[in-house]
Length: 383
Image 1 (cartoon, one colour):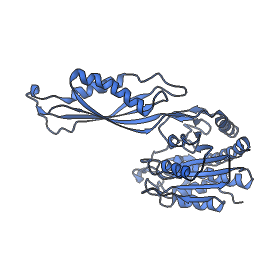
Image 2 (cartoon, helix red, strand yellow):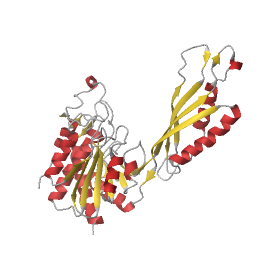
Image 3 (cartoon, helix red, strand yellow):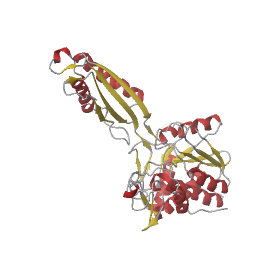
Image 4 (cartoon, one colour):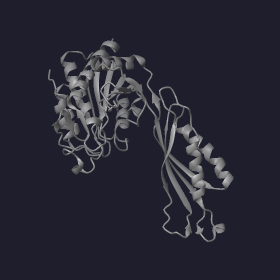
């Protein structure tokens, strides 16, 4: 059975400038490697996004690795020590956009799968769920792939996402949940008028500021198991008034709430309305609130699965990883509706930055950790 060098696979992936929604051959690189191992590969294009599902083996248990080949833009390439898509290896590090987030992890799992298959350790089904739409809207990738799997009658028993979960060193952290996220746009409507005759107008700006101050200073909760308190952060105030002598007719603001499992997107919106309605009535201001939930909060509680991951990681790194829910959102927010899910990958200190890089030794170490996890998984959950 074929074996792979995870660093060389990672370099081949990084050389594909797959800034969302472009693929630029990244999925072809992975598909070629997996096909050579005997994986059954299916490309799943949805609108402008291409995705890949690959599986090997039959029956249960079904262990899935999920990830994304799309990357964020590199910014000014002249600011990089090495060109962002050259995949240079120097000073013991692998440089390039996607090295950390998360082409290095995809390569590591492919190499781990090759070794586990060669050793006959896959006693069930092993799969890859790889999207090209994680760094952007997230609507034509994992969400639709999971729906396709359900329609095909494919059940995932457990899933590991290869996001760069470690803050500083390999073995630091496993992500066992994520906060939910809701983006809101608040618009207050007044009455336009001349600044010299304010009694003939109704200025919406003080009303908007009063509402924002109230929302910002009112705690949502005191936290939740393994979660920090929910947080509302104002991200933009927009008036769009080009004249100095005109009271505007509308004033708007945008804010984001990262919330823990005390809430759902729906109950957050109910809370916002309960906070805003009394103020609007008191000051006679008309407002409109538009909200989009980009992900619900979740916490994985399958301790048998989490302890398996933790034990394998500690054996290979000497560190007992922290169970954490910190950070932003990931595609785990969709997968949690289908299977218990956790996240473990490379060190994320430079993800999305100029000169993104990872230690070459860490890529190799991650492949070893993943191979141990695959072996232990089928020993633990196999029939």
